[in-house]
Image (cartoon, rainbow, N blue to C red; front, side, top):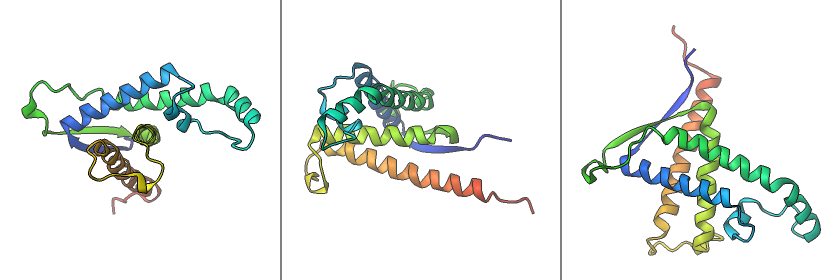
Length: 169
């Protein structure tokens, strides 16, 4: 039986930039700076009202949680590995296909969401009112949201197909 997968179409420059963002994420996770507020948003307090319990919980779980995020990011990088670097700007808008196996879809979803959380922190986004449509820095944040929404829709379709595959009648 052939492995189920999602074929994600995007401009070559999008795939290259997405790979760079994920590479940056793996670097950030490797450093694990406990004072970085973006990493704090990826590892929220389990007990916001109890500083001691939160610190104890973080000591027991933070390394594992960030390790799982790094594993997810590496799975995404594996999917993006076939995308060549841009040698010529004329190729920037050429369409490329990125294949995502069903086994890695959740890793992609979690990694895209983590990237959005980190960028939201860097931009000071707490809620929708903090989004500034006139600020170009929000372009990557919005683009990641678009990619995340698109992948969720494709993953839902893949799940529906798995539950009720077509028959050869």
